[in-house]
Image (cartoon, rainbow, N blue to C red; front, side):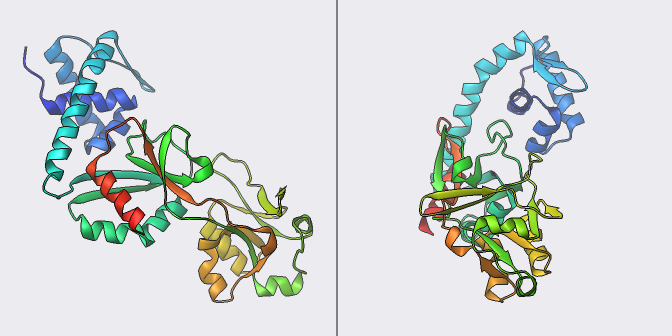
Length: 295
C-alpha cells in the first residue's frame, strides 16, 4: 500500500469536517476537482471508500468515520506543535480567519488590523463579512465577531468595543417638514427607513428609558439591509433611520443628520470577538487578541 501523505490526510479531514468539497477546497486553496482527485487517490491507497458523494451532499462511510476519529486528534496535535515551534522565536505565521458582519469587520479595519499587520507581517488575515450568524467551527473560522447578545454561550468572548449605541437619526430637511418624535410611539406618524435582517424578517427598533423597554415595528415605504445605505437614505431626507452610532458618526459631525429620541437610546453591550473554548488557540489568534486588549 502506498503510504498517504500528510497533505492527503489533511484534504480528507477538511472534506469530512465540512461535508463539502467546495467549502473544503476554498479553505485549502485548491479547486474542488483537484481536491476530489486527492481524496480518490487516498481511497485508492487505502483500498476503501471513505466518502459517500452525491450532487447535493457528502457523508462519511463507516471506514471514513473510523479514519477521522483516529487521525483527527493526531493532526490536531501536529498542528499545535508546528504552530508552537514557529512562534517560539516570536515570529507569528499562518492564516487567521475571522467571520463577522460588515459593521464588525469595518470596526476591525479601523482599530485592530493596522497594528496587527504591522506587528505580524507574516500572518495572512482573512476577514469575511457576512450578515448571517454562522457556525464558525463548521465553516472553518478561527474566530467570529458579533454583538454580545448574539455570541453563542459555549464560546470564549473578548470585548472588542466597550459599548454600542443605536440611534434614530434624520436629516434637518426631513425634520423641518415633520415634527421630531418625542417618544417611540410617535414614529407611527413618520416615514421610517426599515431594516431587513439576514433571516428575511424586518428589524424592530428597540428603545429603553429608565427601565421601560419599547420595540417598534417602524412604518415606512423604504426597506434596506445595510446600515451604511440606511445612513445615506436618511441624509437624502427619505426618513428616519435607526443605525449604530458608528455608522452615523460622520454624518452627525457634519450636521447632515440629527439625533431624535436620544433619551430613549442608552448604550448597550458592544461587539465581541469569540472562539471555541475547547480548541487549541493558534498563535495568530492569541496575537490578535493581544492587540485588541491593548486598545
